[in-house]
Structures are given as structure tokens and as C-alpha cells.
Image: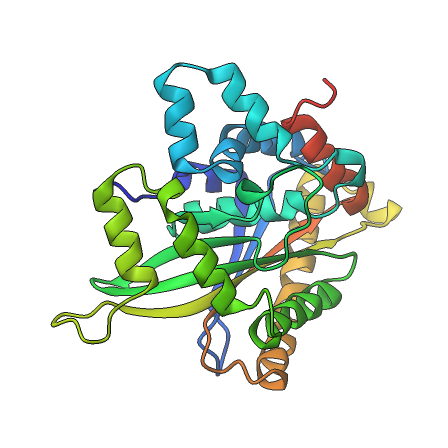
Length: 303
């Protein structure tokens, strides 16, 4: 039975992995990936080329992709995937959702079950709930269902705070909450499972039976993509390439390490001790412009 991530570790070659550590006194992990830098700029064109290779798996179900590929309708496949995204000029969040999907698949090795994008009826739909749901195997018969939450803000503290508030709301509100989302996954499984074995496997993990002789253990967890802006001074921009790279990497690393206490504080504030959080932090230069440009280029809105 084939239920593996659609993105391999090669995607991670684009990034300096500065931090991969446990957050003290929590069940959570902090990851900092910094996009490759050349000539004192992030390599956004390379990132866009990579995202073009992966955005179809993000925005369409496995079954849908199989149907297009079976008939070799590759042009239609690309167009259908691109049509799911909101117009880039009003698109502030989907670049973060796509990047979170890529990190969960390539770094955490947790294949996607469902994304918010693939169940949208039109590009203008605003679905509540998580941005995507992935499955992580911790050990045989032991799984985490991971709900994704992406926030892109100018300030990293704000990004983290807003993500935790969204997760708290998701767990406590009366509608469009965690249980509703699990029900939604269950109803959508036939789209993700292209064969009966996969369907039965996913069903057994998402809705495990406590009275099985060898029961599946399933717990819920969260992945956060916290995008934020860095704005090097003119003085820093004038440094030679080697000095710029070393300074920027160390400054970003120090800022992100300084947020561990804030993450722990949010877990305590919302009493989320029983959940695992996988926090992926990602710095942008010119955040507002870049997140729109990424969507514009991968969906080929304009060449």
C-alpha cells in the first residue's frame, strides 16, 4: 500500500537549516529554515521553480491527480491546480499554506491527507478549519493526525501568537472545530484513496476502534508555519556577500531562538499541554510583495 509523502528531502537543499530542536518543557519542536542567499538576496526564483513542481499535489487530491495522469491530460491538470488559488493580488496566505505542506512532506515525512485548497469549490471560497491535514507515523500502529496553521505577519511574535489563537479557537468553538474537521476528512477519504486498501487503512487510523485486539493509537497534533519579515539596513546590504550571509543567518537564528519562551507561554496560556506542535519558522524579505509574487509565478497569472 502506497501512502508516502509526494515531496522528498531534495526540497530541503534550498534552505539553511539553522534550528531543529525540542522546545523545553513542551512536547513540541522548533524548526528554522532560511532560504538560500546569493548576492545578498534570497533565491526566490529557485524557490518558485521548486514550488511549481509541488503545488499540484498540494491543491488537488491524489485520486484527481491519478485521473488526469491516467489520460495524460497534463495541461488540464496544471490549469485545474492553478485555478484553486485565489488571485495573487488578493492572496496573502496561500504561499504560507503551500510552504507548510512542503515542509511537512519533505522534512517531517508526514504525507497529506487533505488540504483546505482541494475542497474549495471556487478560488474565492474561504474555508474555516485547518489549512491542511497530514498523517505522521510515530511507530507501528501509532500515529499523529497533524492539523496545519499558517500565519504570515511582519512580526514573528505576532505570527506565532495569531497561530496559537487560531488553534485555540479551532479546539473550542462550537462549529468548524476539530471534531467537525475529522468528520470532514472521513467524508473526503474516498477522494484521497485511489484504492480500497488505502481507503481502509486511512479510515482505521482517522477513526480508530478502541476495542480492536491490536488497536491503532491516534492522537491529534498541530503544525504551525510562522512567516515573518526581515528588513536588513542599508549598511548591512553593503556588506560583502560572505559577511552579509554570516550576519543575516546569525541574526535570524538569535531572533527565533528568543521566541521559544513565547511559544511555551502560549501553550500554557491556552492549556494545550497535551498536544504536540511542530513549529516551522520562515523569514521573508519584502513579505507583502513576495507572498503575492510567489503565487503569481507558480500559477502563471503573468509570465
